[in-house]
Amino acid sequence: MVAERNKDGRVVFDRGLRAQMMAIDGTWRRPCSIEDVSEFGAKLTIDGSVEGLNLKEFFLLLSSTGLAYRRCELSWINGDQIGVSFLRLDKKKKRPAAQVENA
Image 1 (tube, rainbow, N blue to C red):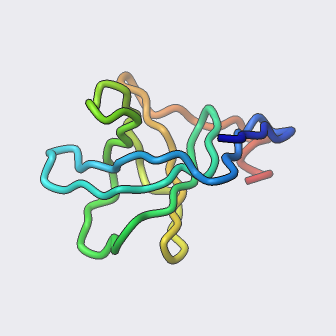
Image 2: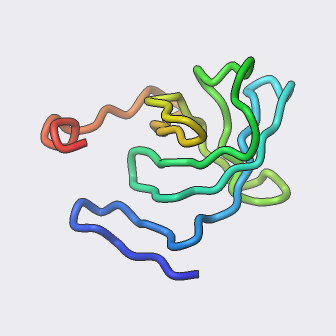
């Protein structure tokens, strides 16, 4: 898999990296592809509909066993693609003002 790092530190995957989204309470799962990722968040392409899913907060499972994951919140949605921000266990990590303006 070919990945390229942009000048802003975002890593872009040529074909997407397979992953799973899962509800915080485990009530739903949805396959997805990670299109790009940074320290603060990622762009995902969702397999199937997101209608009816609670996307306010969810887990992005990075391994088949679920041992590697990130807690996320929805930032934006555009068709089958969504933007997510990564959350910290202790508190939400804020993006520096300069990066928010360039997003």
